[in-house]
Length: 274
Image (cartoon, rainbow, N blue to C red; front, side, top):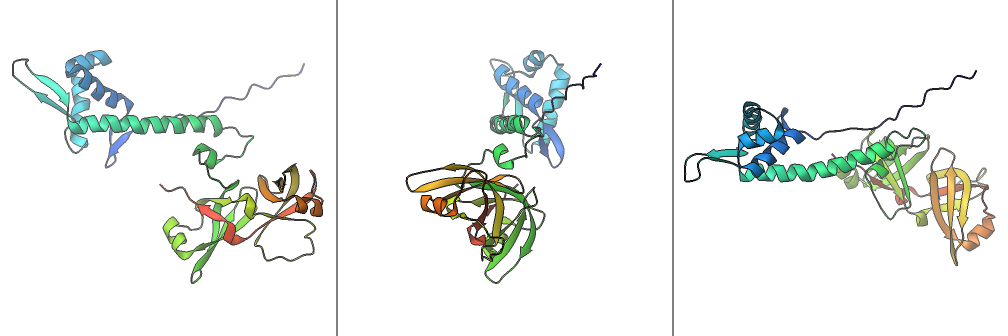
């Protein structure tokens, strides 16, 4: 009798958003909700009751937030015709509103990670997680492995997950502004119109620094130009837009071997800043 393998566990990502002040915890969802309850109820007693917690626990939490936030978030008044009251300060209202904005972004990010991060059969895509969209058809995530400085321009070498290397030429000013350095993750953007396609380059020498070998997967013909999609030897794909005349001259067809040529000056680099 064949023993069945147990099903693979479902891996996912969870996360919570917390506010800290100089390393000390101001609070997260629970404490912010308590502040919101105080604003709605006008009373710490009623807010604590709505949360199912003691008055002391609620006050201790609010007192800690008041101390750590740099200015009071909750204030109490006594006396008057209606008796005492508790309310949020302007800073308290601002903190609750800002937390709601940040939490909405955080939840979307965690949800995106949960959908894509643990599909171990697919390459992890930072671009997809960040929902980054550009006009460049070719987007590669890699790690900077070399920075060669020049008087005006710098040469940046990017290693992709499959071992393929891309070289980009950027200004020294861009290197400084982006903080480009070795071991930094970076994204290479290449327009499909900047990709040249060649065949039979085994014995030829060309000036293009980036030579990406692969196999034609698909051809989409047009009236003047055609879209060529290459499955790269190191993994991933690359899209090129070339003329129909070039398709015919190179005898391109699905399954044919080809090389994509990209000048280093046509590679645009982007980084995710903290």
